[in-house]
Amino acid sequence: MGERDKYLSKEFTRRQFLKLSGKSLAGLTLSATMLNTLGVTQQAVAEDKVRVWAFPQGLLVVDSDRCVGCQRCEINCTLTNDGCCSSYISRVKVTRNLFSSHKGTGLYTDDPWTYFPDTCRQCEDPACGNACPMEAIYVDASGIRRVDQDKCVGCGACAEACPWHMPTVNPVTKKSSKCIMCGACVEGCPSGALSIVPWDAVVSAAQAV
Image (cartoon, rainbow, N blue to C red):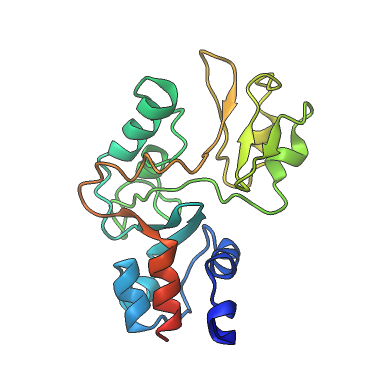
């Protein structure tokens, strides 16, 4: 393996994308190979319609331009993790975005029908974990920040501390939850707004630059 291959290894590439997790890609110019691999256009990137999250299994790509607001991601998330269908406790948030545009002026504005999937940024220094009085939010072996259900008392401090209010206290179980990067949200997305690109494909696209 050459120096370039070592530099653009799977672990290095994942660490680089972790720095971009949940952030806008606007302002970045991606190669044609990377755009094709991620399944997005440079125009969508430039118009701030693309977000990426570094999952253990690959790169979660969110293209808000393709989101139709059907909420299937929320349904799949809660069926997989909670055994019920609930937009409120879903770890991926779409429904709450249906009621405000990015300008905060309501559902139907000069920038109408604004909705997009949004989820935990898996922050390196998580405000949610720092605020938890029970130290219930921990990092597992894969580097994912999870909620220890045995320690959680449902106080909601994590939800209040998170800048994006991603953790949600289940009103039935009185326990908080957040994205564990299981990928259930991607399954069944009819429009391709959500996809997971395997790390090998991302690394290959990076090496093709």
